Length: 176
Image 1: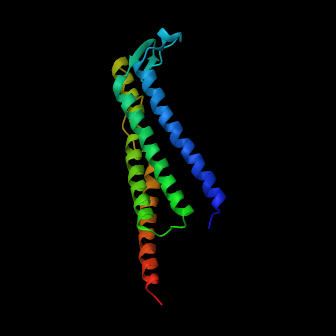
Image 2 (image 1 turned 90 degrees about the vertical axis):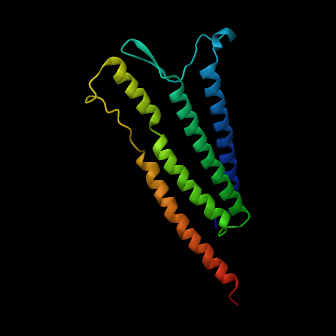
Image 3 (image 1 turned 120 degrees about the horizontal axis):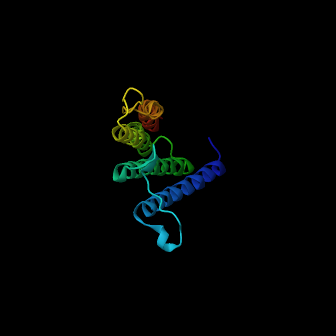
């Protein structure tokens, strides 16, 4: 079993990650919707605005929303990890709650596999449209993030194994 101090340290790091994720959402929202030049800052940071071939291309809300969704999904993963660690600190390992967290984590990774490359695809598609580039020169097709997909499948299989472990642990409670 992992020592209590290591679990406590992991719990603190995950809490810091959760706080930083919230701050990331807040700052992205402020920088997206607010013009900070009236407060003495000499720039207006716009998410989804890039300069390509001398023109500014504005991707507005699509990229902003998908970035926020991706941050929220990572935030959910941090919250799930914190719940698992707090259960381990209480020495609650083979319980239904942990099984559900692991299974739901695999579902979040599937969503992340689908949504992770959407901002990039939006940007590349817009550049191709705007510049009348040949689609063969730039790959603008949507793609899955295979790393997230592999993690999702692995966690789902692990959750099934964990479910079986819970069943065996419950049977052992009734064995004399």
